Image 1 (tube, protein in one colour):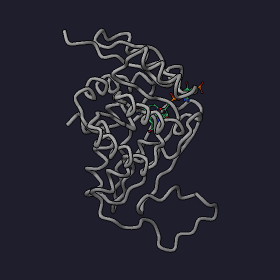
Image 2 (cartoon, rainbow, N blue to C red; image 1 turned 135 degrees about the vertical axis):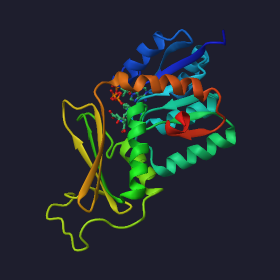
Image 3 (cartoon, rainbow, N blue to C red; image 1 turned 90 degrees about the vertical axis):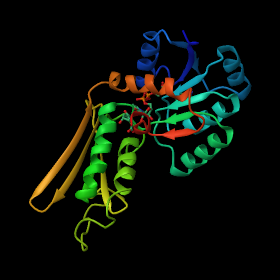
Image 4 (cartoon, rainbow, N blue to C red; image 1 turned 45 degrees about the vertical axis):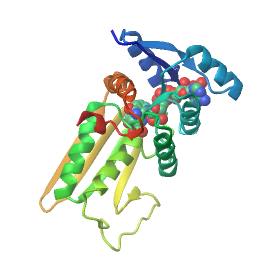
Length: 250
Ligand SMILES: NC(=O)C1=CN([C@@H]2O[C@H](COP(=O)(O)OP(=O)(O)OC[C@H]3O[C@@H](n4cnc5c(N)ncnc54)[C@H](OP(=O)(O)O)[C@@H]3O)[C@@H](O)[C@H]2O)C=CC1
Ligand SMILES: O=C(O)C1=N[C@H](C(=O)O)C[C@H](O)C1
């Protein structure tokens, strides 16, 4: 048997972190070395990592902490698997460059659920033929970032193939600011936050006399675990940062 992969988790007590710890316990090829707490001095972080000797850090924390966690990984030669959303495009570019220079594997995936990846891919397929599109993402009301990382990634994939144009009436006027949602390259993203929701997204297309809706629903957080498991194993064979799980399933 190959050597087991040693995994530490930042955010282990959170909604996603708890699921990750359960998933690690169920896979005998993975070892949970313990949680990583970064709300301490650099010396104490270094001490935790020296003791745990992880190969991989799984990060489900907050948009405010994840960039620093990826820097810690670079310093310690640990491969990050990041689900935390809310990194800016500048931060993402900077990390991509630094991981490439270091020759270190890393995965940042805005969504680990296979259905969400398919939703993004189907939306990009449709946008080529139906360029009038709006994204509605719906999440629980504890979510910090808006729009969701999934909606942003979907919008990027749509933009890569969609004939660029500004949608809606040219003289459109919002009587309440924000009524039309956020503008992304000429089309709109709408964010709903409600208790009772987990993670949902609908991509709506319109054309003369017809509409198309592509919808994905994560009804619990177990839905993300096969993707996290796959990413932990895949990151061991990478030597640069990969953004989006779709690159692993083609
Ligand atoms: N890519 C994907 O498939 C998915 C991504 N997500 C993303 O994952 C992230 C986490 O989501 P969720 O689990 O719901 O959030 P939670 O708020 O439930 O969990 C976040 C956890 O991070 C902890 N934390 C915050 N700062 C630190 C730190 N410096 N060191 C260690 N732990 C820290 C928090 O601790 P405390 O409570 O003590 O503050 C908390 O336990 C979000 O960005 C969300 O968007 C969520 C679902 C799927
Ligand atoms: O905060 C969440 O819950 C989720 N965040 C990710 C995102 O921002 O897209 C993934 C999933 O939608 C759940």
